[in-house]
Amino acid sequence: MLYIWDIEKIIENTLHEHNLDINYEFNNKLTAPMSYNVSHNTIRFNYLQVNGYKAKMNFKIKETDENFVKIILYHVLGYYLDFKKNKHDTRIIMYGKEEEKEQLLSLIETNSWEYGRTLVPKQLLNSYDKVRELDKMLIKS
Image 1 (spheres, rainbow, N blue to C red):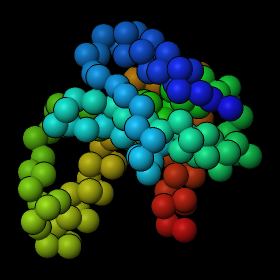
Image 2 (image 1 turned 90 degrees about the vertical axis):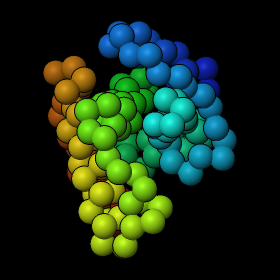
Image 3 (image 1 turned 120 degrees about the vertical axis):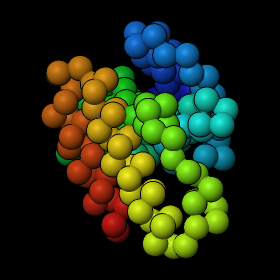
């Protein structure tokens, strides 16, 4: 079981390792394991969601707790990198037509996985790619 302080330490070390100035905080109301808020430049995480997500992936992904959190974190850092490199018109998410919203959200999601992958150390690349594939399957079901 990963606890709040475990996840905070992993996030802190990873951000320091990559020289990234991003805030982070625990949020027990978050419905995802981790998210990035571009307006506040903050990574939020819910340790219960992280543990639940890990349990869903555990039968396919054999990684330490620390590496699993890093994999989730790299994906979330991909959102940060995407928003830093691409100035998406996020008004579309609020006011756009359904098709426009879906296209933008799909683009952001694809970019976040790709940009996040650029931070992943070689020894975690296979697991990162597996989590990406399994995540797609979880979203569909």
